[in-house]
Amino acid sequence: MLKLTHVSKTFHPSTINERKALIDLSLHLNNGDFVTIIGGNGAGKSTLFNAITGAFLLDSGKIELDGKDITFMRDFRRAREIGRLFQDPLKGTAPNMTIEENLAMAYLRGIKKGFSLGINKKDEKFFKDHLAELNLGLEDRLKTKMGLLSGGQRQAVTLMMATIVTPKLLLLDEHTAALDPATAEKVLDLTQKIVRRDKITTMMITHNMSQSLVCGTRTIMMDEGRIILDVQGEERSQMTVEKLLALFKVRSKKEMDNDRMLLN
Image 1 (cartoon, one colour):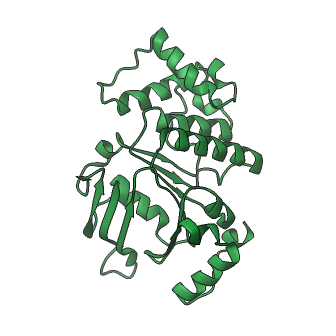
Image 2 (cartoon, helix red, strand yellow):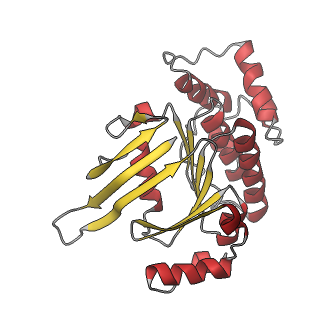
């Protein structure tokens, strides 16, 4: 479903700031896989997402989505098939536009129609029905500007925008990290509910090592632009945070020194 083959990316090559962000990385996801991704700062997690969404050209390698080579496809074309949520609830929405206008933009982009925000009664009902699933009362606030919502409400609407037309791939870039614990748990529950219901192939970056073993069906650990661990099935069900830390030390030949991950 998603296949990366020998993908490499170096930023600022041949300069003092040269950084090898992705190194000969290969990865294959089947339809419906839900992969959690962990790793320290600079491990390449967000760079991996940026490569998949087409934020930059690769130095080498190939990316295929649903059997189609998208390596050189423009980012705005990939956005029709790939949904993405960021850590910052302010990203991915237009704060001065209403909830229904933001949803309309996401819906129209997904079904590849010409751009027009002519929202009719049928559209309103469609949006209300979807927002009601969030159980946040937002179905009665379609005319409210996105910028007036709380961080959790906004992230929940962003999740709805990313999935209102089922994407072939959903990328979650620490999408609950900026929320308070109670709100983060609610948004994560909503995420898992939508992903399970619509069988969406999903990748989720998290700094919470316990969460990485509980959510989804597979856990990947990255370090210095490489995948150093990929566990699923019975092996994953028996995995603990302590075992993850021990494996990180063996595979990377160093101790985990990311305070945020260790505290989580």
